[in-house]
Image 1 (cartoon, helix red, strand yellow):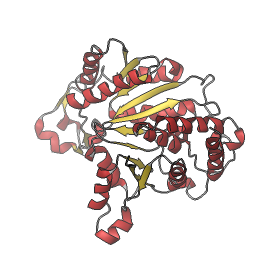
Image 2 (cartoon, one colour):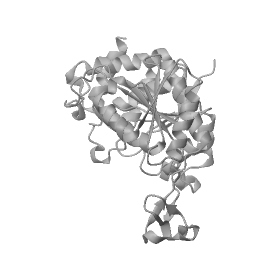
Image 3 (tube, helix red, strand yellow):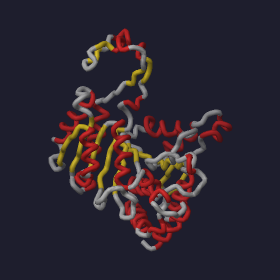
Image 4 (cartoon, rainbow, N blue to C red):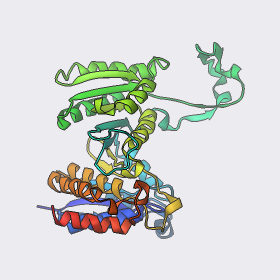
Length: 355
């Protein structure tokens, strides 16, 4: 059987400090995966004149998936290609508490839900500009009771919710609820009271799809009500799906429930491709200090293995993380400990050896 192919991008600032040892760890597990590192960024520009050459794009296309380090710089074009070019429309962000995580919650045990963020549309289409450019359209605000052009100089951003985009991500949520086989519940949340047309469409599509899944419970909340419920009773949640902007914000908030973004993995799925990255950023303030928490990256790697039908080693990784967090000596600074990044990986290697 041919090896799986995974394209790897190490990312910027502190990201390589967790990406490099995570990939080394996966290589050491003898999983039948070839990790390929396409050349992008300044090195690629010096050679080919572009930050993202066709050769790198072809390597992504030929790979079974991509493992992506957090970026804020020259590899950003790769990220845009992985999203819009590969149509990875569902951003899955699990929120699972592991004993030892430095959660601010009084009773975090048992928190285990997943937020699915629509990944390609909403305000993230980047349709922005000067309001005066729209003045001739006579866009009337029923709330302000005025035309947009009468409100004075300013800027606009267009929120677009499509039927196809909503249907595929909401269906993804219902299918995930079946696969998780936990509470078997899907929650739709958005601002359908104030945005009755756009967010109202998202909700109505959710209601329609729910009828096709009688085995899955369905509920919906206005997004501000949902936020309150997520904080006060996260144990009641199973699979939550929402438009792009809300999902970006709520999933970061969900990470706070269990102990921070350093613990939050992420995967972006399309019909024929997926890529995986930690939910946190590049952490330039701590780059080079050997203190960044690798947990989110390692758990994202576990999601990658699940996608590649390597569920047993994925579970080994998760179990090893649980073992590491059972000993406070292994905790990194963000979790209230004093362990270094490399010290965390040493403990992780020992835990894997004993699984």
